Image (cartoon, rainbow, N blue to C red; front, side, top):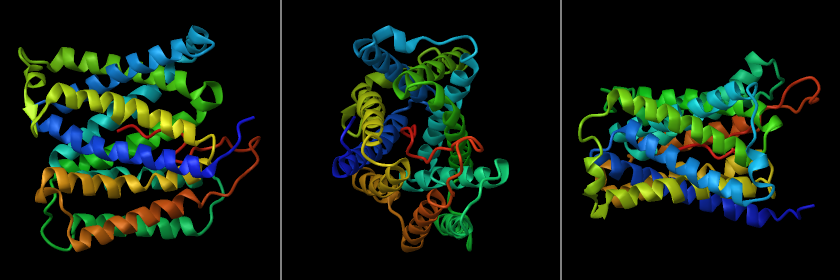
Length: 323
């Protein structure tokens, strides 16, 4: 039996949040070099699949843990498409058009959507603070977008950010079933595999004659290929493993709430690395705080029911949220 070490769990979540936060800026540099969102999604999915596949084979019992049946395939495909293909692709579109911190705040509304589904889709009992959390989240997004004046944010970027939130919420809900039948590592390995196949099919339809030329360039003074390596290794595989490890020491809700440092760190890293265009004004900072408070309230609003009556829904920290 594993001895729980809450302090170690918190450290692991904070480290994964920092890596994810830097990943937002790194991804934006890759996109600025001319790599398209679909290309970066493919690079990330294929690289993470290969890395996690190798790790799964090295760990005991090796290949046996990767076995799947035809009946399991639809869930794995849906899990991979929503969480590991569509969510990051929409997120990459969002950060190419919005400051990284703002794009993350729109995506971070996913836990609110999950909580609403728990209440109205599965008729779970919730505490009244869910509605307070929802109100805070909506008010915060209104402040972030500064809707009281002429909308300054890119409309397509906002839609992409909200679309990423919907896909991320779907990923959590599908994952609630997946984690009951699979270990987390093989489940995520095959999900990345499904995302890689989807990325290959997408590129087969849209790829130009020299679509990968930017990989030979630099962005922000760093080779784009090296930046892509960060996205795969330190922006995907390592943070995922850290979150999975943290769940051995902390409850899922605690992991998700501690992980809310990510948008704050992401905004700070982007502002330092990318310049004033990433800075948030006072109203947007206040709105971001309201969004995070709303998410925290929603994460803790569900009332535990008997597992025999209601299938469990994951908090946003049950598995590493794809970026």
